[in-house]
Length: 333
Image (cartoon, rainbow, N blue to C red; front, side, top):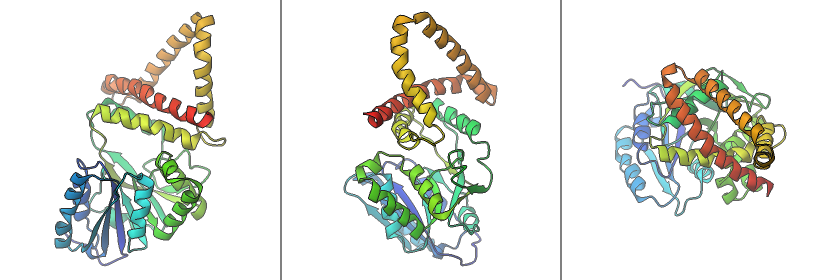
């Protein structure tokens, strides 16, 4: 493959723990990059004692060295310390000033590094697309993101004003090393490692980067994310996201604060009202169900996906809702 001319040295940081089913594709996609391989360093941080994935990623060292990527290292924690700490450790180990964070479920197109390095911004968030999935929750979440984030495939600046309304994340991220570590140190000074492990660390981190840098660039450049294929795994992940969502958005001024307050009040009011005013609760439930079906039908494109997305929406409400309850109780209590 034709390579680009020697340019800025970069470090690709891959945090992982249970990614043995998908990290092969991530690593292979880096090997296929058209960016000058001699300018690429790869740091894999294994977040815990997973022998299988350590053996897998270490086997790639020879492949990378043969393909002119000589700087390939693997670092493993003795215990699971969380995604935030794994990313911070990867940044510390990086030799270069520009970092590209890539999760173990992400596949980079061959021109990705060349294109994302074409931006002059210190922080660049690419657009994440998904591969096909065989579970209904993934279908629903994809449809929901399309509904909420109308401009997700466009290039624009994310500022404090449009932060909550913008599609963003650290699943794949280009960032200046010193800016990233400075934001990490700010978070580490405010929260313990356990709190960071259980908090919405990615959203908080990006918000800090916006505050420090003035803005971050949301780019139309795409990377592909492989969703979880097992329904049980997706349910577990959706429940796990509930408390993290509450952690960031249960604060006045954030986009979803008022909805979380309303949700919490309904949890308190509905059980009591069901005893004294059962007919009103039943009528409200029927009306809510009808509105729910119409909304899901609107989201289902093509309409043939309606049954799949309807099931996914129902399961998400149960699992994510339970996670929200857990997070709200922890916040209030």
